[in-house]
Length: 257
Image (cartoon, rainbow, N blue to C red):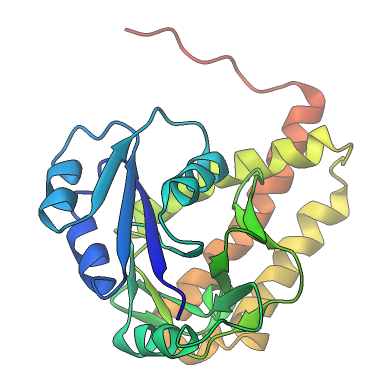
């Protein structure tokens, strides 16, 4: 029966970390790698029984690979501080680990709580995440926007959901869209991609139709419409920033006061 280490990387997650750890308290070990929290994240994690190490921030993937390397066991469940393992998902993982699993990595659907409800429509869902893996055959790989686990061989799928409390509110979502689209545009630019008129006109419209109609945002009322519009705006913003990078028209940052 393989033992399981849970890894969590943190920075100023005092509002989330206790519930994240509580949701995986059944694991054999919980490892938290903190990158310099100024709040009570470290103290809360230690009170919850987690092993806590501190490390200067080196990027999402590198930090998560470091946490996996610290773990005492080869099977890793990696979660973020704003995520929760449901009892149903916990049961499924524990059942899988009763014997040596046949595959080296497993993904699970992730559901976000946003705008007052669980969102199971639009591009938000099922948002499959590979989080359970054997570190001997898998590791986190770096990507400009969202890091992911690369597994040697096929990946299995677990049935139950990982819960995600990603955005505090609309303002938080808009701020993240601004950051992520800058990273995505820079990645496109560095790989030789250039913005076309069709990118700015057609891709956002296609994103809205996909989210609102094909992925049933229309059934989710105003939250579904809001998310569909914001996802389309995100696509437009990415290509607009790419266009701006091509022309070098971005203004330099203002000097500090």
